[in-house]
Image (cartoon, rainbow, N blue to C red; front, side, top):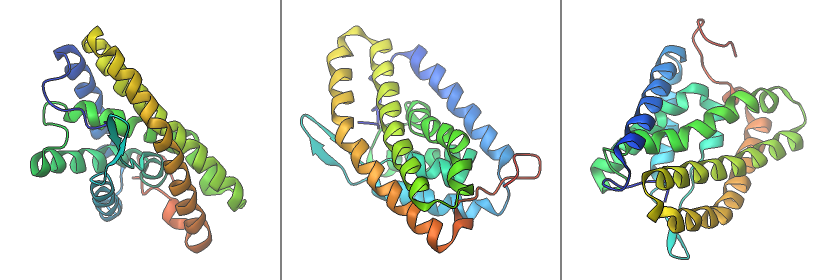
Length: 210
């Protein structure tokens, strides 16, 4: 349900979210280092693949977002990874839509970006693996609910008739939040033990240092 289809949202919602998403993509392009391109490509492909696997939950379906993990590893590059994956899914499989590309990108990438900014430094610097895993799990679950809230707000702002649908969306995100938390915690634990450098975003000298 994070992939909002064409023809549902109002023009003001589409326009506003698209501007915000474009700003995020532009910021990501300015901040990332050339060395980050391969990493962004790999994680974009990973997001592309896992989000194609939907699990029915009541009248809706959910899929992994990995936004917290992408935000921690890619920093502002999460906007680039997300928009490319969503564009390919819309063109190749009809998931989401081209007119809602900006909305879907913002709804998924922005919570992950905030996690990367607020929680990422602690996860990268701490030597407490369990603490890093807990922070990653909590952040991943929070990211899911933030995306759910953004989706619900888009529906509500577009038409009051969508309010019942918006409530169902928030309910279906609860099991997804649990799954995201477990997956993110497991991956962060593995990376902290195997190669902590992989948790460092590659930013240009003009951006934040890693």
